[in-house]
Length: 242
Image 1: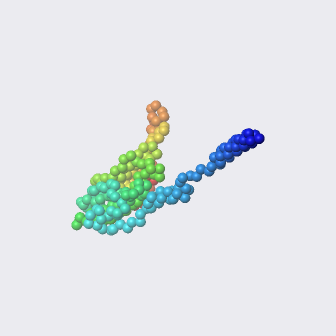
Image 2: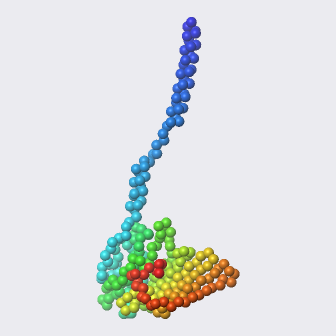
Image 3: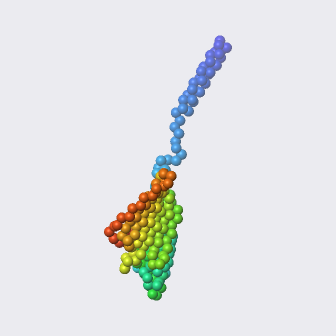
């Protein structure tokens, strides 16, 4: 009898052990995996990235200064600088292009400083649209090469790019007290053709040229149109949108 009781006890123990294993497997299947980085933290990180892009500064520039650096706000640094006589008074004037210290997707203000006889400077022209942004929102540099210069009473602003960016060669001159766009050359290249245009304020005309590169002899067509002479002021002219 004792032997039979022992056998029954062993059988019950085996069934109980198998039941525990099944319950353990079911519990494992129902385990919920929790992300180690809560959603709130992700949202906070996104907000920090957005906040890291500064807003366009609200700057008031001085009307006069003893030196060039007197006109440079603390949020900017000088990216390009050119010296030369712009208003034909035999004094070297200055053209400045600023770049924000913490961002390359903000506007680049441009200042024209005319030199006084005591070698101080006065702010004569300001524009934050004449020269375009350096990078777009995708961190792509729009122009491979950029430069400014002052030669023979003219301000030259040149942007060299390929494809859709194009190349812009602009010349500004003083007409009495206004600094106006005097000439503009543009060049664009693409699949199957490339084109160019020349704007001439003095001649009051625009010449456009297009070359078909799909044909072996690459034929070129050109057209010159007379336009109404209208001064385009430096402070209101965007080179890349002209």
